[in-house]
Length: 380
Image (cartoon, rainbow, N blue to C red; front, top):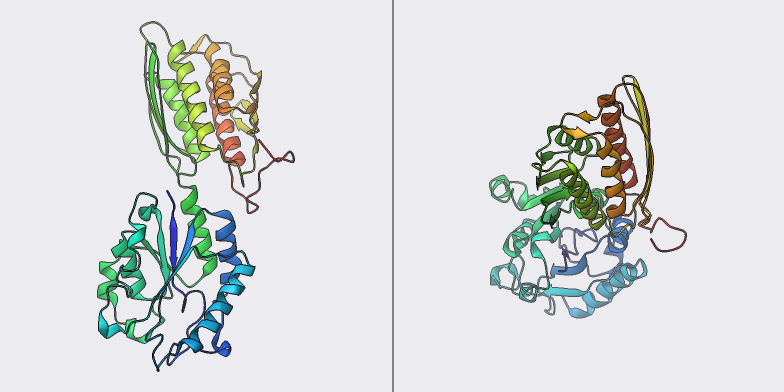
């Protein structure tokens, strides 16, 4: 489903020209600061359709002849196009405010074609500088990015209406850089869910890669829960893991299938690897122990394990299952994984491994500004 940026023109892409606010000559065309640079980045890096929605009071009348409008408008579009900024649709309302036309913002008369299953209005935004743009977002049941909310004199005393629209306004700013950063952040906040059910286990996992480190873990094994909570906390991933396993048999299937399912959902959530760092590596001390973890999200599965344990179990988790957990994760997440740990205390040793693992994941999935696939081969 397509997400849309419904973008106002005057006061948003180009600066308005008081006192008439009509842009009817080339001398009045001044682009909003840095709009070209950051709209280009949004167009190239983020998956939004651009739709222009603008009120042009009295266009086609003697007060605002079309011959004064179209050369300027087409000039603006040409400059935008040279920067890779393309509008899939342009909607222009020509009426005056007193006409109360359903096609005039905040009316949605021009935009009814977007109310079908091909569009995700809930994840779309209206970007504009007036209260009518915020009200349009409310009427479309999407969110508003409000540029310079107090720019216009007639809107300075609109605090009551602004308060009523608080749930609609996602961002207030005068900076296109901030708009880009916000939209990029929103684009990474995706939640993935995955289930794996066998005759031995039933595993359900929800993951948000770029979260806050929140965890709800229930595997039936207290120490495994603790380790997975540490993984979520130090990677800043949000993890919800619920595993029902045949613990009356032993712990093997519960641990193995939790790791397999976690690897599968992790792979699904990073299947488009453009713009991530790909590699992560971290050495982490914990009292007498030192753990080093390195990983490559390159699509191949390999585990190198250099860690030995003295105890047979920590809590109810057999220590022989730690290597199996990471082997299962590596296979289903399709990543190369190197784990090396030294130390005397087995509890500290495996906990330092999981913490270093989390830090390495955080590094590997970090977004950079290139939006390129992190491979010289051109594929992963």
